[in-house]
Image 1 (tube, protein in one colour):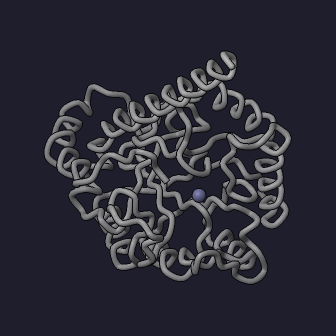
Image 2: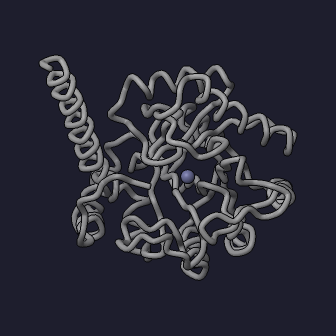
Amino acid sequence: MYSTEFFMPRIDRLASVYLSHPLARVMRSLSAARVPILMYHSVSDSLFGKSHPYYQINCSPPVFARQMRWLRQNGYRTMDLTQMWTAMETGQDVSKTVVITFDDGYRDFYTDAFEAMRQCGFTATIFLATDRIQNTPVRIDGVDYLTWSEVAELHKAGIQFGSHTVSHPDLRSLNPEQIEYELGRSKETIEQKLGVAVESFSYPFAFPEEDKTFTQFLVGILENLGFENGVSTIIGRAGKHDNRYYLPRLPVNSWDDAALLRAKLEGGYDWLHWPQWLYKYAHHNMSLMQRASFAGSEGWK
Ligand SMILES: [Zn+2]
């Protein structure tokens, strides 16, 4: 999900809770308003084969319920992405506002997450890879996906749905027509099923923010298709100067106790964007260099 592969101990936790978070609180009054967008995937005990807490994309149901209650008790309210973006752009008070998102459309949202959210009066946006949503649960690697009737029921209960492509591909490996199909078709499918406009998009896999040519090209396609906003795996809280199609998020999983969750919400995790960016940038340049030297040796032959 994220490609920052060099944090073996929980440096992210220690530095966020004890160093960056206190600093962020001091700086808060000086900085522009930022809204935390939480990124969940599965609400279950399934570990999806990942071992280090930083990479895990599941949040166990009791921990998820505790996190929701904590948000409620601490005065947070939820908004969807479009409401949040409008509020931020028009200068409304967005402190204590949180956006809650779920990628992929796992069925455990319906069975193990929704009730906890409903009890707190919270809403969420679920991003669907529409090929995986059928009339009976699709099972991939032992994990079930939502069905269309569950999606419709959740939508009636106030949950929003966004596009996470049709088949969850690495978009950079596709040609422009295929990319347009992946984005346009999934948007259209959800709109037909729910009878409402789909405004939000979630980029599948780690977001290639270092590849400006590609990300700008993709903004053009998203705009043409009528998307209003979107989210990525860039780490941090969203501000009005961010690209509205690639808003940063805060990954949350079973390992987020109250202290770490609070630190993330209040900006204590935003610093992680720098090592994340450096890693991607270095990686990107290295592969460009490798390609150049490969091309050079080809030429020499
Ligand atoms: Zn995904």
